[in-house]
Length: 332
Image 1 (cartoon, one colour):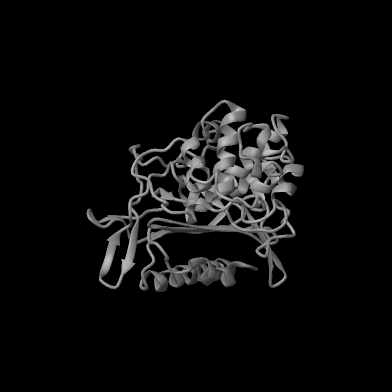
Image 2 (cartoon, one colour):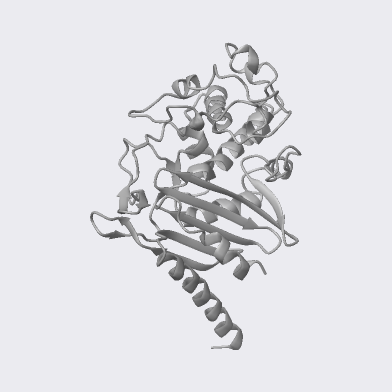
């Protein structure tokens, strides 16, 4: 083996060792690190199902929680490219019976969390014992007072992305799941991704867990029609790499749309754009989104300056931060 090859092998072993150390502290899940199209690490730790001792693998499908939001944002931009809507359109153009308080809210406000609509996941009770329609999800927050005047401030709100899913359905005439499948997942050959309805039988789907002082327990039940377009998708680390390569490689959106999607709004302290955070860390741009939902912790990170992708999907709530541990090793 050449010196360069030996060095690469050592780097990969170091990545594995870092995750091994976090697995000893409770991490379970799948981790992928890639530079460009070259996969440096694609490995899984722990169990997808504790009751049956079924191990996680790189092909295990996990709930990706709020990583969903970038797919929802891209779907909106695809509709804009087709002249079926504009991100500057008022929401009431598509929902004529919307409350008067929404008069000044635009699609742009929903995409950037600047609408003032309160986050329905923080409104009691955030639970569902059965499937909900998009209209039933929206009914949970439509009459709640706004937190601020639209466009005046920034506050992370899942409600905005639930509304975006509803708009995708209204404008396209297809369900949210159908639109994503036909316009993103099938064209990109993302065969391990979809809308994670609890009633569906989904092969290789991981079960979600929580760590407690008394031991590991099953995460509370959540029907995924409730998080909907704000957090209802499942995927694998491999499919998320495919997505990242396609999105930033210009195979999903036009250059103009991608620029919109990755331009942060001034109101956001985290550099929030459309379904993505865009920040500068130690002089390098990082584009990312994290997620957490009953029994799952997720992060997808892209360093455009070095063309590095990190995807971490865990089936343990509040899992150790693998991305923070790996990032210093792969930024260069």
